[in-house]
Amino acid sequence: MAAIIVLIILVVVAVMLISMYNSLVLLRVRCDSAWSDIDVQLKRRHDLIPNLVETVKGYAAHEKETFENVTKSRAQAMQATNPAETGAAEDQLTSALTGLFAVAESYPELKASSQFTQLQSSLTQTEELTQNARRYYNGVVRDLNTKIQSFPTNVLAGMFNFVPRQYFEMAESNREPVAVKF
Image (cartoon, rainbow, N blue to C red):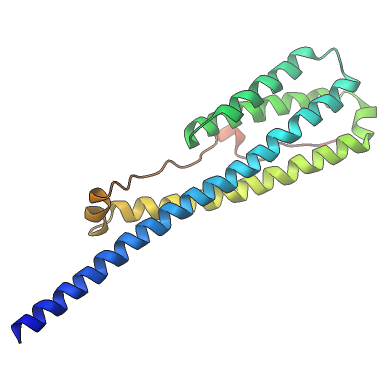
């Protein structure tokens, strides 16, 4: 009888350990997937920017420094490899885009251009999608980090090298999408 009780206890413990491990794996996979979603939206943003710059250049060719800032910031954002670097690089890119839109304000013909309006709309939509993807990613990171730090899962997490993830944060000044007003 004692052997059956011990066997039942071992089975229950094994099932609990398997369940805890699988929940950690599930959250890790969700973090990777959520980061991939952010990456897709940021790539879309980065792909829109050269078209936007070229459109504005057609009207304001003498604004060379503004175009160079956007181009340089875009290149840095595309090279970022982790949430902290990406957040900082995207902050710089948002600031550069703000300068580009300030230049565009000076050109009524540009503001009336359907190509510019369409690019502006696409960029705004991309900013919203990125914000939603960032919110989901940070929620999954929160869940994973909580599980990694909670007992008894923290013991298992340590044994299998589950490490906390970084949140994807933007600077306080750039928490809102790029404001595009004409």
